[in-house]
Amino acid sequence: MKIYNGNFSANALRVRAVALELGLDFEIVEINVMGGENKTEDYLAINPNGKIPALEDDGFIIWESRAITSYLAGKRPEAGLYPDDIKQRAIVDQWSYWQTVHLGPAMSKVIFERFFKPKFRMGETDPVAIDSGVKEIAQFLPVLEAGLNGKDWVAGNLSVADFALASAFVFRKEGDISLADYPNVTGWIDRMESRPSWQEAVKPLVAMMS
Ligand SMILES: N[C@@H](CCC(=O)N[C@@H](CS)C(=O)NCC(=O)O)C(=O)O
Image 1 (cartoon, rainbow, N blue to C red):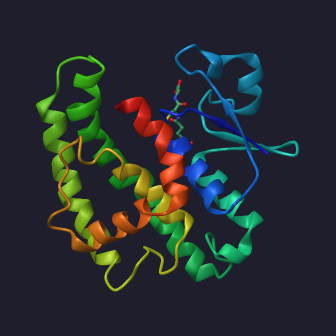
Image 2 (spheres, rainbow, N blue to C red; image 1 turned 90 degrees about the vertical axis):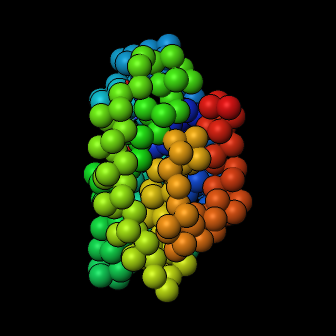
């Protein structure tokens, strides 16, 4: 099994983390996005979007990180990362999609403006973008806080949704996003970040950005 990876990518991070969590055998194929390797004919045949991550498993190809993690979970159903029960599965999907369209973009906006832009000299920080991102985070984090009431993991048991969500929090400190008002979220991300799979998967991303 091959994971087409970029160490800089939070989307690739969740795929590596789930593969490690499940103890799957995989080979990392590093795609040099800065060097344009994601736009070569060969790579576009794997992911026509020219984006990483992608997965190749015995000739089967899948792209989109959350679809990949659900597929990987299906290879070790006993781990329960993507449950068979349709209601439990719907809850997992709910949080994964919510991270994709709501919390993730809000967190990324603020982290990009406050951390990545100055660090990589990507232009002036945009206070309007920060302001709107901060407001969105203030709207969405209470939803996650309430969702975690009485639970260790968002869908009850550890699932691909936790891996999807956790990738949004990697650079929260650098983005000056405080979790002080969110004890459930703080406990959850601490649990997530103490998992050996997560620690191993996040290492190359953190190394690149420090
Ligand atoms: N929704 C996709 C997003 C993939 C994506 O945006 N990948 C970025 C890296 S984080 C990429 O490959 N960018 C290179 C490009 O667009 O040229 C997923 O979750 O897999």
